[in-house]
Image 1 (cartoon, helix red, strand yellow):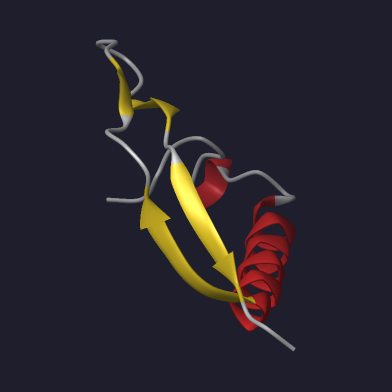
Image 2 (tube, one colour):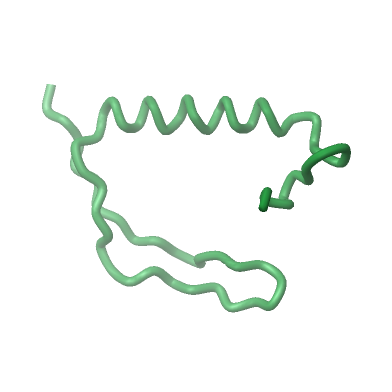
Length: 66
């Protein structure tokens, strides 16, 4: 099933494709500079009947040495 935050099909957001391209660029740039990403603790759960998500996701980032 598609996510419904930006809609899908005929009701899709016009900027949805641009948002995906930007997200891909950000993660590609991040992965070029980072050696490891590890959980630094338990995720903070957001309990809601409508939206499932996290309040927080503590991580430790180890950058690559140049």
